[in-house]
Length: 354
Length: 183
Image 1: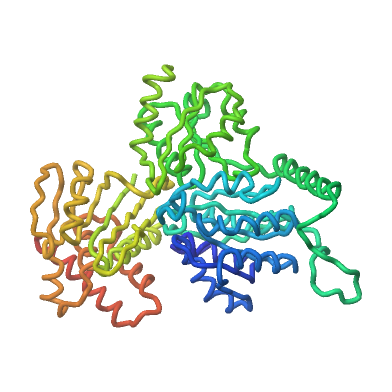
Image 2: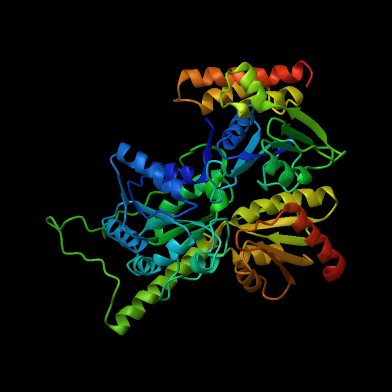
């Protein structure tokens, strides 16, 4: 299959079109503008609609409307823009509407800057908006994986009737790598008999995100929780690499995940026993797999482009059985291979003493 | 094993990102793993631009390098910023038309190419110094084959005027010959 050198932002847009997305609503923000630029050209070619909304708040509610008709729909933004979408995302989760949101995140808090960061982890994984809900969150680390996970995002959204966030960062959005568009085969999806497409001869349907009856609303919440448990059982996904019996397990997602792969390779050349655990789904977090993988290791080093967010999920997963250390940069600073490797040497000297 | 970490830096408008893309596509056409990562701050024409290209036989992890093995500096600010970061034993390619300063490091291989002067001399001053530099680089160190670079140029200029492609082929030749005839 032919490989094309493609920018992450363009690759995610093309994959969305190939996954059957025909509707996009968004508002410009760096470092993800190439997604909008690409779709403004591409969607009209396939009979779709590209619409630049007046704000992110408007865009996400347009997504709600489109999703309610059963159409595959996407929006994208970065940090501050995704913050503005949180009310809408809460509504989409409550109404159990499938959609895909791409966050090519950048340095925060506030307006922050436009360099790559991972400080939107809490926002993406822990709910973000009001109420007791979760998004499915996918964290690609290469442009090819970004393509593959985009197909998967639309599938998971439809299968679980849940919004899916693809959590990338400015680096993944801006960089180019060779990609192929292998269209995956997924099991058949249930018909969208809930979608609002005109009453015709059928019965009345409505899709709302409110329930004034406390019992009814609690019922909805319990139903959502059952779905989230099911996701944890069935969809948690991760990648591992390196020594089968490591002394130090490195844990990182997305961009940092791939940097850690270089660290493991270089460390192993120096004779260190290192391995990588890279969560691919951030919600559901691959807790059980990490607990298993952590058995027998002397220590875990979590590396993130934030000041310790996924760290909390790692600590919960290993339940205090293994010491967990942390190295983080934020504000757009990218950790380097040599720096992380030096940190590993430091741990071996001072903290772990294997 | 092939593994090149190449940093290219200069003014915005010098075709820094394009040069990187041509290298990356050439590497891809040869079946290597490649990545291309641009600096994408609030840059503008006349400001500074840089990108990192990695060409490797191994799956690429980190896409930036704090100690590149090959560094191309197209202007003086880039020379001062990046020359100190080059790996000992690495290659520093300097556009001496715009960089007056001399490299004081003795642990580097330095290739001096007066790209703007060559463009004036052979190409009526056409703004293809980036491709002249690419030709010189590949003649000095075959990171990718020249034929692959020519195919990559065709790929990256697809949809543009034929004249532009021909001009870039000439520029590649000018850089190549400059080195072949003794830089």
